[in-house]
Image (tube, rainbow, N blue to C red; front, top):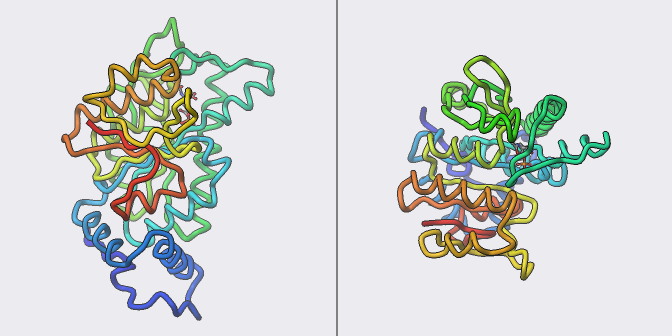
Length: 309
Ligand code: X2W
């Protein structure tokens, strides 16, 4: 499939009169992008680079559940921009905060071991409901911006029980079925994934969304791997400051000894390390805020936390 990014074929961004809402939103996001991050030439260079590979290899974007609640319009407009210029990221989202809110309203204390939710039968029904609801919310917001988005809420991750005694209905991913994702991109639709998995006998299991996004990145080997979180990176819990770079080869062992590296943060760093060990040395993972997504993708200057080997 040949892609002609709209930005390359659009001679002028100033005349927005008389064009459809879809194109208006494209043009306005292009203008916004150029205002935000600099020169058209820089953006064009990155667009050429991103369109030089098959679109399933452009990017994997993990969206933390909190972003769907707090920054849905910003997220949808960033993804709409990518779509309208002909780029098809694979999007995988979580739903951690929404699950916790429902559990807490029902008087159930959310329970984790090392950042992984202990998921009994009752919790699992909340997990499934939240994943479906948040997936629909994201897909609907995208459709409103003229984006063809495809909900993929199952059929991708095969898993076995991680540790049935300890975590109950939690999966350890054993395989990734690329077909639904490839078919979506082939059909010109952004694939929007949850991290729900299935055992060979059909039991649905809960999987941490950071972990599942890592598995997607491992099998697709994209040019860009981006984790969006509401904190805009990894925060050093002792100083309250954002960590700008983690060089795993030098820092990993010491980092794990830090008292603030625990729970979900520890799991995230471990998982990203595991992923980068399996990818070419030049690969890296950026953990950023939604507002920095375009800057991260289209300029040399990074934002948030960069993790590399
Ligand atoms: C996660 C899945 C959702 C998730 C959970 O139940 O919270 C496990 O921990 P965020 O918003 O990306 O944190 N599953 C097994 O990871 O969502």
